[in-house]
Image 1: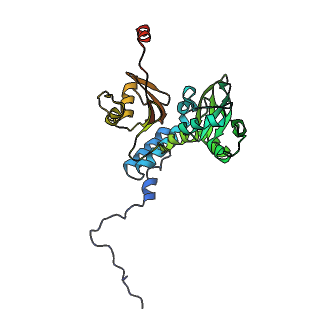
Image 2 (image 1 turned 30 degrees about the vertical axis):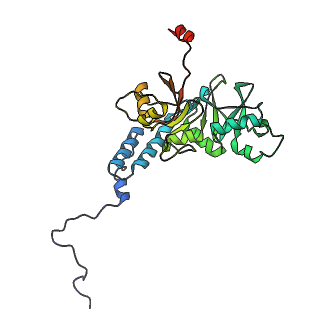
Image 3 (image 1 turned 60 degrees about the horizontal axis):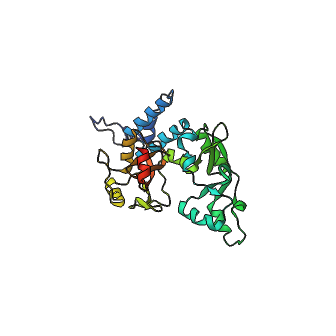
Length: 295
């Protein structure tokens, strides 16, 4: 005989507590109405972030992924004047110290003129053939990939993936060299700064030759002043990147240059939000004759 009443305990009188919504239900509540444009997508992302449905890193990456479709190769490239290249006619013995000093994994290779890039070189290829006494750079040159200045960054990322290529030479409408873009440059637009071989959890200033230093944009101005022996201008900023943004009046971009007395600062790497790497160089003092001619 079945009992007329269930043995399961029922809700307590006056208990009006609603069951806790799942993460999926809370997120779906934000997107029930499909966004009509990119601003709508950003609004949803901001709402998800404010409700802690996604963390700060995920929010930054999603915004970066949306932003890359608005960028072209020109926006993120290393300008031609800042490109580190190798001369195919130089011997490996001459090139090796340069390769070590510049510390890149890939280089454009030119012949006779820097405007005549004949290919690219991968440092690991040199390691494979170091014991070959007749080795020359031309034997290690790979075909170069050339792209127009107007190439969309999201399209370039897809081409890098499909072709397993990590470097592209940027050319203008007349075929002239204007810069280069690497896979790392593209990824940094999405995920932010990528740690490289110079990165250290504490050290932010790295000697890079005579009177030249490579430094993270997060370097404290006080620390830089001690290294350079010169007081940096005071202001509402604490880091080199903050000072440079103040001086330029905008977010620093790769290729930007700014001078302070006899110091020259070049932005080596930046993303859409901030400068990442900067080179500081102490310029030689002007000779009296040259100083008078500039007055």
